[in-house]
Length: 292
Image (cartoon, rainbow, N blue to C red; front, side, top):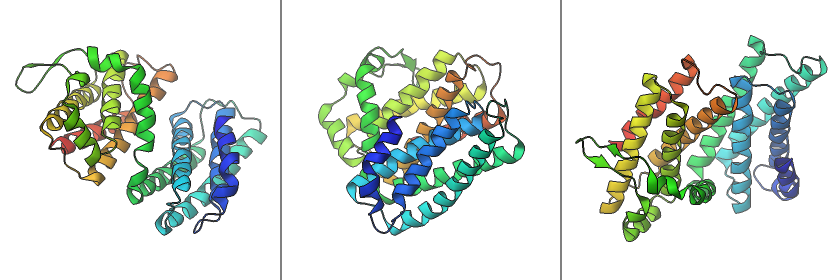
């Protein structure tokens, strides 16, 4: 598994980094949890979310360790995470040992453990992103690599209407390059936010969802793209890093949820679950706050 190989590659160096001497073990545990979830072939939201967030955290830890920017705050967050990962790993081993590897649903108790671990992973990831903003460009750079392959999306994105009813086309190549460079210096992962917002819009449109929550999210994401493009042309992108980081994380989470829905064959369900709807509405609210 690629993730496991990456951990083995960095484990010795990472383990020696103060003030988190057990960082390598935390990484190894996190990778083991991902592998265990995948081996149980679970398709429940709790299990899938846990694996997805653990993968994302692995990348963040490796990025931080490469830069030598693990802080005391991160150490405290990782201690709680390490304990929770051990608990989840033990639960997964128990599930496997009892021969219920392919059980369709988790028990309420098992699900609660998974959800609890996901919450701690999310909290740890947030600590990493807030305490070490210098690492933020690294993940968006990966997204920007994907953007190169779907450059046509920005060039040929279907026209929409802005709040004044005028036709709007999100044509990235037409943007003022100097303004974009200035904005990117202020918010290094701005391109990643744009790409994620476009991904969210495109995914919702492909899924042909007609719920209010999905439609509102697609509309607000389009509006966010308009605002970023307009502000960039004017060279007045605010440099409130905390707000941008929060929005980036939220968009990333929503896109992951949409991908999970798509992957697990729920492309055209009649309605969203209450939890999924809450995530989409929460992202819409955050986009609106950022636009304001």
